[in-house]
Image 1 (cartoon, rainbow, N blue to C red):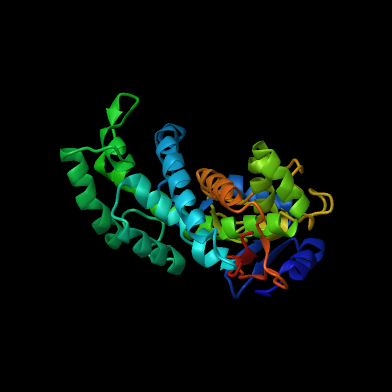
Image 2: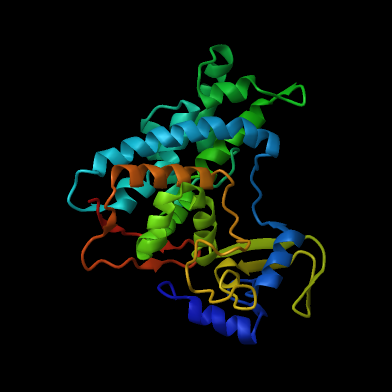
Length: 330
């Protein structure tokens, strides 16, 4: 199952599209239409702070600048090697390092954040004591002595005429640090694997960078980093002819929905020109980090390709991506 869950997903879609899993204690949804409806009608099982459109406008410029610089440094550091693992040397580091740099936190915090995200601790909740303890003194210093970093910008920002509260500042910073960490790293690894698996499409993206957002969305559809998303019904909901009670835990099989042949033609194929909506709930800022990362790699490594004999092997049920990407930079 960890190696290849797709045969099971196919069986569920075809014969058991809405089924109770007693071991998981949840209703499994496997068809695109049901998963999409459930994501709209339910709430996350563990809600964390989510940036509003106004907050995103504050965050995006600083994160883009930081991601560009961080990706450039990481890519140039490995460009001269004969062979390199892009997971260990690039995709696992870029999201956390870019966010830490954007916030103006010490570089050594990147390793701590990466480890937190890798182990799922702390959760994407800025109220977590360890994360709050990391951020609180920095927020206090930025309020007293603002600098040119994103944390200072958040401390001094006003939305609808109101200054952001300390809880909001800490929440947004915490969401960036944790929400943009491991999930984005996994998604970036799958994104790079899909493009390297399709050299002709990689060449198109190299020649036409405007195709990157579509290539990213297609990778999230085909290989989401979170194939299973747990939600809770706030009211009775009917899906696939079955009515689930209020409070029911719903397991949205994103990995199955993204390959539903009733929604996507030839769904196992990676196609950067495919027009379609992905359901993977990654941060809206993750695509920005992925774009900066891909641009830096292609600039630093014009001949980027798989190492001889290597094939990526995605694995994982709740968090899925290749854990090794051996490439030749030139």
